[in-house]
Image (cartoon, rainbow, N blue to C red; front, side):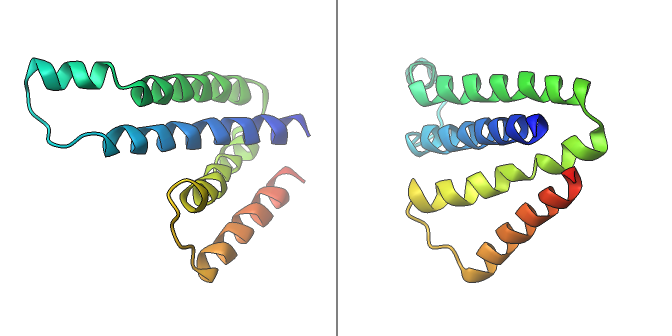
Length: 116
């Protein structure tokens, strides 16, 4: 049960990192190698949130790998796809096809089978 909880948190952090990266990139108009462009990216708070999320996810992933078997831990990282689909729908207002929902259900079923 602890592995599932940690995997859910780690997957949510991975998804948050991708979400923040997408939001950071939406604010980029044209890439230019000028100081004003570099400064605009350094002061873009979405990049900071992205880095914090990925760092936390990486540290948690190291903990998970140290304490559980790779054959159980690695498949659970696919839970990030579930969070990604929900984020696409909620944050970016994307339409999700029914076939994608079936895929998400299959991922969740697979995760259940892996840990039992």
